Length: 318
Ligand code: ASN
Ligand code: ZN
Image (cartoon, rainbow, N blue to C red; front, side, top):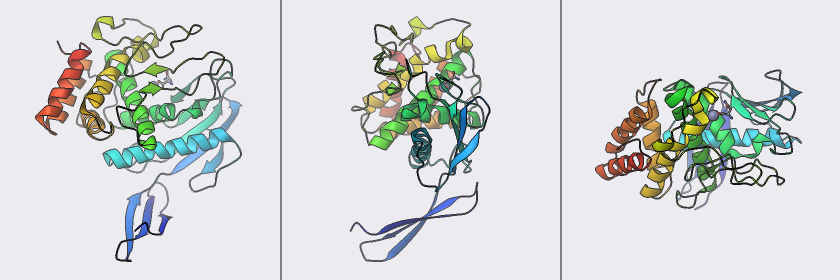
């Protein structure tokens, strides 16, 4: 029976917990203790001064300013993914507060994780809309916090591209989990919502088909390779961290669609275990691939075979 449900929150940050009350089939009251997010949204009021003024805290009702609520909801959705899919209590697995600043800078065309908080620009209104409008972007920025608290992959070269790729994986999973979308039905697009109509860009990146993210006359093609043969050696972008991430991104999308079902279940868990199971901060693509195969082997041999197949398709394995 769909019973009365009520949620209470208890405790002070960072020791927040949620008590979910429901009535079971026998009419008995069931109380379950679970972890709860602890969000604070600040407004930089179009300056670059962080953190800015607090405009919405946990359990506060929505405010009039849409980006504030988008950030609040997006942080909540990412928290839910981490907890439900991976049993992880926030960024540090110890209930760390989730802090974000919106309206950063003037016409600021990006979002970023600064080591402590997520920061979102409004976009210039010509190419980009506000960056809180995309759940994959919010999940991506938060995932940088998870990476920082786990393998702490250095933001350069191959480990940097893995850091970027894992952020895209968690971003995509956040959206798929929130929408109840299977791997087969997912778009595998990152930032599909943030281009203005004027430029008609598809997305920032496509995980399933790297290099087709923008696909727009004015923007051209995005520069991501989908195979090691196209690995880009450059001094820009910390050694192409947002470019070469296309290779492990595609490996994950192939692995998840090959397994079928929901990507945040087996595929996501395998990637999560590879990230959190002692991965080196200087891991190469091959080292990470090996870690995913080891994690997949703990599921079963078919899952390990699917992981090997994905890394072979993108040329990380021969
Ligand atoms: N949005 C970008 C990212 O999170 C910002 C950056 O280049 N660090 O990767
Ligand atoms: Zn990133």
